[in-house]
Length: 195
Image (cartoon, rainbow, N blue to C red; front, side, top):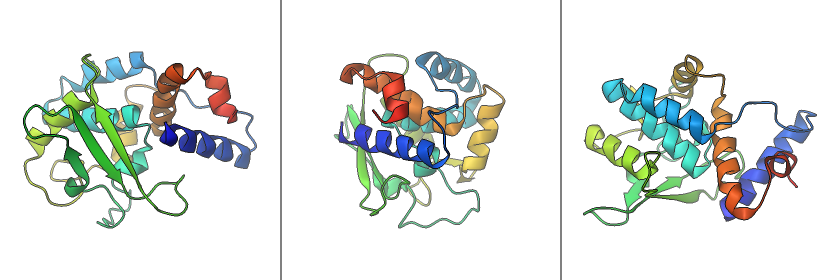
């Protein structure tokens, strides 16, 4: 859970920089994720892309900016998530997918990180979502998450979320961390305060 600690420190630092005692944004819960799955599950290819991105962020404890295209549309293969940065453990019936995150707000030295997501055996499953997206995605050029032939940007992501709930894209990260913290014995307050 090394990544969990890194994200916790980033959350605490950000809250301190803003003079906040804790985060005031809503957190994504499994119930929120289930609502997103049901809503986006009725939207065809568009929903497949959005759901895969949501699962990558939530289950990987990732910020939207770590997996989505920047709003300015400037794609940099050296910095952004590409098709080549996503691998599965085996080709037949994969159990894990690994995302190579090249840059992060909490990675000041830009060493990058490998985030591995596995099957949950539940309806909320990052493997199921990402494999379904990979079947839809077909080619391997450009930014990994593409919608309508162009990279899915953070602005589009926020726009899609705003119609469904009041959860900020950062809430996806924190929601995933809160869910993961249960196995570590940490409370949401400890996470928000960095304690």
